Length: 276
Length: 302
Image (tube, rainbow over all chains, first blue to last red):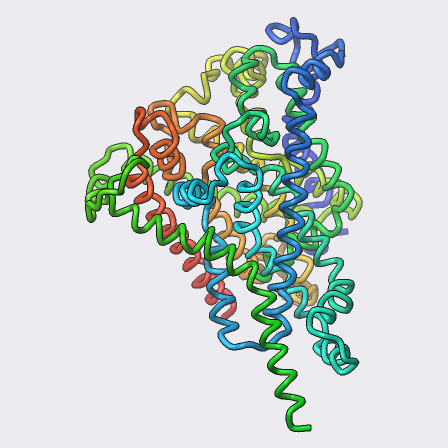
């Protein structure tokens, strides 16, 4: 039997892939194993510990005020996701299904900045928040997150709404529904898969965001997890079990979301990339 | 009868504007205005206190003569190009292999390869910092244990190895997503092309070279330009792992800009004007990356 489509034999391909997967996963396994190590085996123990202990976890939990920052992250992320989903689906629907003057100009204008790196505007954004009295507030941070991510989500939602037939909208209007009712009662329920995709993407990117949070917020108590994890490096230079325990705990939510919603995630990935 | 369509159109128009108002207001306040402000500040000298002092193109002249800026420019381009090449070629190779193995194995491998992509840059940066640690790091330990101890070095503190070390981490995080895009692309290739190629006596390499690669031109253009843009945007990973050091060896525009405005290299005085001039350059570079994408995908679709 020869390989149907591609150059290398099946077994050889499988071997290469397993090697690549092992190499890729190794650092993460090492991370977890290090968090389970005894403190005194960091210096001269083997690469993987022989004796496992969970002692580092309570220590990391308390010394970093993990619960506080975890909930900061959680609510900042939830508020951002809600804002992005709402604004992006409203605008995405308007651009996909409604007719109004200057529609295309506005759409292109909103999308033009899609590729802008977050660092490039950090100086004027910092000044803007300062002007509005929102510097060092979580609300200010959420506003930055929503405004910087909404255009991409809008783009995804528009692509999704365009797959729905126009007749749906027209039929609902003929039945006497107002424009918002059409959107809310007819379109949104049909758009659940698209909304799910936006939610996952937004959750992951907001949960993982670092630089805006690190710049906008100054009070330690208000920080989400990422800046706190970053500051741990200096504090626990040799206490690797505590450091890695903190890192490991911070990954749990994203891994759960990834595993739980993997299918929508992959669909969204390819939709986003292929449409752009 | 005659007024009904008109009324419908009018309510549709009002709804259209009403639905885009929130996103447009946010955009104007937190994207549009800041862009204009960055352009303006780029022509000024300003520490954040008092009024900005208009200095014309002085910041751009200074940038031109600033050795750190020159180095950062070279590093930004080098980083973007090398990561783009690696992150475009290797995932393609992996996706092709994936399409060639048993389905169950392919699913497992895809899931595993993607995990680094969902981890934050802070976590991956810190994790790899530990791996690269000169004394306790796994990399040096592993090199010593297989008799290559002479290669062991202080990876992130050595100007020669710091940038490649960060590129490895970038690749580690990027393989999964790019591989998924290619994999989806390969699923879309018409199998009859392969059959036709086989009838013409094509070997496996020829099938890859003359069927797979040309069929994936559009996808490749997308992956390439996404990676190029991410390369120009590079910030988080470098900021976390080296902060632009040692001796600016890993300094890119993003990190230099940030340190001018918020960091310590500027001394105690923030240089918001000079930093903003870098913002303008970074935005222009991203414009170039977008153009590359447009040109590439036009050409690929032809």
